Length: 238
Image (cartoon, helix red, strand yellow):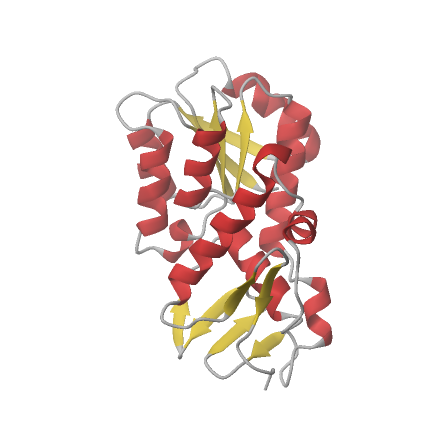
């Protein structure tokens, strides 16, 4: 049963939400103080984090920023779903830029939260299905001149050095790399990732691509085609 941690200063949220999520074989535990939640993440294994934005002492943005910069690979790649109380587009964009995998405005329907969590967990655990057809020469791997992608372990190496990506970042990179030179529109990419809300569709993809590019520097393997989308251009698979 996947183990989830909720960090939210609303003391009345965790118990009913945990009871509901058990219907979907999801085990929810909770902390109401951000620092306590961060310490618990460092001490115990969790499969995903549900993180509120508006909290005293340390807001969700700062906590997410610390996770993504943590030297512990387990924490740096932990899937994060952020809860935005105001539901403002700006909050969601900031969360994506900091490395969140998804977001959900408050108030939310528990069924939608369960569905989004299931998607995040599947995305983290499963290789990109279309990529296996071109993975050579080793099954489950994509090799290029300076980048290697292990689809089964969901790991990436640039010039032999590991690159730490979030679950969503890895899925998007593997999607592009599975079919080099093919142009993917933003709508298609969002559809394959399950997407976000309509008003920031384009912005969400642009943010994800920007995050991946920064992590792969100085390698430039994702190209933008104006008014068309993105393509992977690191050479033919080896």
